[in-house]
Image (cartoon, rainbow, N blue to C red):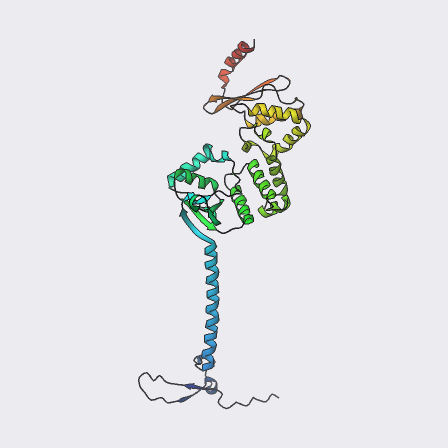
Amino acid sequence: MVTPQKQRKGSGIDFVFPDTSSGAAVNSEVAVSPEATGASPAARPAARTGVGLLSAQIFESHKLEGEIRDLKVQVERLGAERGAQLMDPRTIAPSRWANRHPDAFVGKAFGDLKAEIADAGRNVQPIKVRPLSAPRGEGEAIRYEVVYGHRRHRACLELGLPVLVVVEDLDDAQLFVEMERENRGRENLSAWEQGRMYLHALEEGLFSSNIKLAAAIGRDPSDVGKATRIAKLPQELTGAFASPLQIQFQWVTDLERALREHPDAVLAAARVLGARGVKPEAAEVFRSLTACLRGEGVGSSHPPRTVELGSGKTASIRVDARGRTTIQLSAGALSAAKLDALEVALKRLVG
């Protein structure tokens, strides 16, 4: 049998001090608690005792401290990555990890980008920059470094327009990863540009191996390996192309094999192609440099040439090592009605 606890003296009693602001006399009243009268506990007013007030103050104090901590975190985050703002492009330098070949800043694609920015009055999509640890340049005018958006930065610089930027303080590894990921989602970097970027990071010790670099940027190690192999091709060979940006991933194995099996002949053919004022199409250059792999000999005394026919139409003329001549016209360059005229012209030319 459970013995009821003896009620302690003074339990169930609240002391209420009436408002004295009106000048009324201070009288102490004894109020019987709801438990003593059988009233619902929910109806009991909040305690006004010193202990209750102290507890509430402590609770509110801890809550305020938590809110202050949250605000500090937000301020630090906003300080690290401030919202988009317009900035003088002359205060921003290209990154030392920049992966764009000079050819990326000329031609139709870059011209279209400049026209779009000029029309809008600024770059609509912000670039990202990081603050330099110490300003540099004449008058220490350069205070930021591009993380990504080198083409947009260059376009604004050439147009004399302010560039829209987001500022974030990053270390080299973080910068490299963000630059690589962002550029892959935009105007695709060529295989050669990717390879040069990866080689630079590896040579500078930013990553200790292809595998760790690939893991950091979320790519397959074989893709990183192919890109670096393209970047390691001799300059004489890459110079055979109108631009190294034209070299494709799937060509590197055959180019390496041709160099390994016939190095002197392949490099000699590459030098001939590189000396030409008007370069053949990239596919023609690749076929000429790798002819030995198809039993066609190596190179030719007559390297491939491309003839501009106007209105975007071209003709490719190639003579292989066996003296066979191939003429390939672009689609739509010759109508069926002109085939007879072509036949007559060929007979007159070689007859």
